Image 1: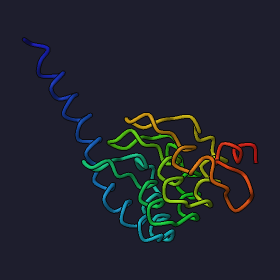
Image 2: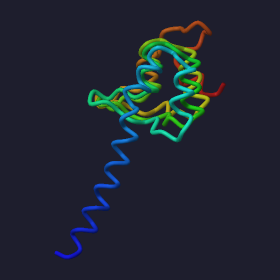
Image 3: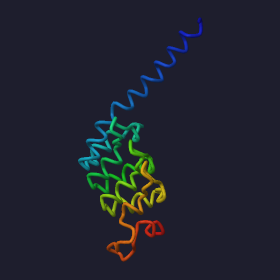
Image 4: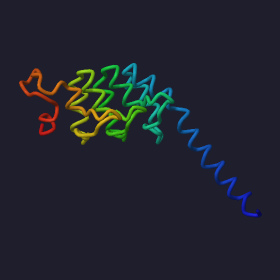
Length: 149
């Protein structure tokens, strides 16, 4: 029992730093959703958790993708956002960008090393979401062929 005090204090300190980092998540998400790279730059001046997630699975990177802000996507990736972080449905940013047809975001994610074969909880991957089999603007049939770019 005499060790509980120090352990409890250590857990409280560790948890408070986690909560402090996650308090910025909503601000980061709002800035990313708006494509406000200047605000994101200011918010990320100190080391912050770019991979914080809301209860519904939204991250700053996913917010930038779903709002079609490729420059913000590139900035977040450059600052350390996880390229293959998954939302509540186990969808990756590449899956979401492919589903929405946001080619610039797809290219940025592929350049950052996104896993083309990662699947969501239903077993679908980005090549399915990109409409594999349907011609794209460049004549290819899926984003998988783009990963060679």
